[in-house]
Length: 152
Image (cartoon, helix red, strand yellow):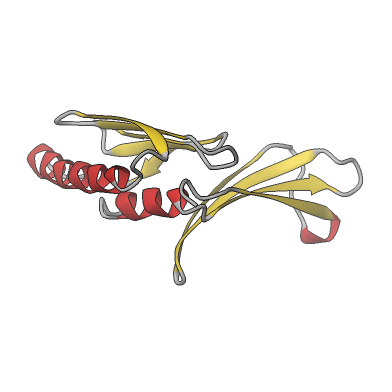
């Protein structure tokens, strides 16, 4: 963990980057950004149907929660504050896939994974299990949900 003063300085720089990323969206999304000294909350509601909504909370305990589409990922570790601006831009560009893994035998949902392609070499990827049985490739059906960009 970073000392409080270092964390607050880095969070302020990240807030400036996030503000830049959301300003580029123009009229494509409703933006709610609330930056405080120790935390930040961002909500993006795209105006185009089929684009991916986003909510981000960078918390005072130096962790973050993020909801991409309908999937919530809590207690993320902040690797670098620089990644948030790029992540927001990638989501706004429509570079998001929500991958659902189903049992081939029963059709029940086993796990969900969200993949945001930030660049050719970099992906943000999180997932969670839904069912109690382990997911194996042989008996799993995969269904991807893709999203449109905020601006066309």
